[in-house]
Image (cartoon, rainbow, N blue to C red; front, side, top):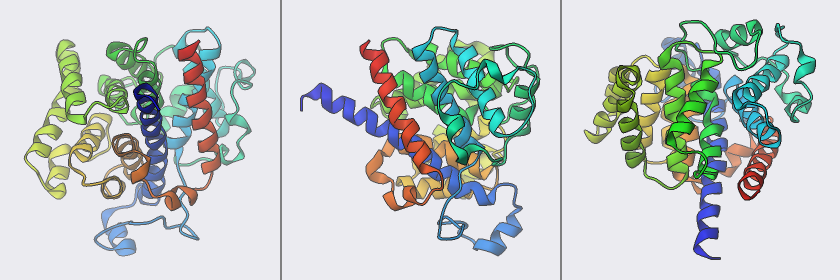
Length: 349
């Protein structure tokens, strides 16, 4: 194997680990979402959930994984077509809306036959979908048009990892500004607050850089420089990231870091929490467990942390038996394999 082949294999390993790590973190945090601290303590003790809790120690992923899969499918559909990318991603999210049995204003016959995810029965269930995503998509009248609302929830952030991975596979055509712009635009289809969509752009950049082999510290440096170039626009995301970096450099303990980084219900706070774990967690599983037991939006923090930690640590750090025990994991494996193949074809074509 020559050096170029080895680089390509390492890149794909990190991308697969990013996808699967996100699913694992999502499923680990799923039973904790919306439970008050006292109920969590009563059920699972001071350490919280350390394993999947459903019958047979199985894990159930949520809307975070569902929408991530549809983002990946949208990128693949775009690669084989020619329409504007944001319109193609918008249609992908409208296909997800069909799985939620939620009516929309745009007729489904315009997009339902794209891709294969609508054939996956496991996706046809509501897994805690965010109201902002449901309402924004159901009220859309034109493809690619941004939502008009003040939401800075994490519904945009939690689904854009495939954009960062796609960019990492083709860095010549997907530089940092383009990656940031596309991911921000994809999130803005549902989330109108700048922190809601710029956090998504920032996360995709971090995944692009780290999947390509750049250290998280260096990726953060590049991202912070880019956010600085945006002036006041980028400060709402830049400042929490700087705080996360400073806390990690000071070796701040997790309980104190939680109090400093926010409640974990909005995008910029969740991004900072995940970055702190990326810098401070001793290994993949320890980091994902901390993320999934965060007192905020547990499944989303678990999913986003799993995407970053998986990308950083690679497949060798993710327990195979955990992946096998996630319901619907076959659909994820099929999607990821097709995603990698489509990216290779696009790059080599």
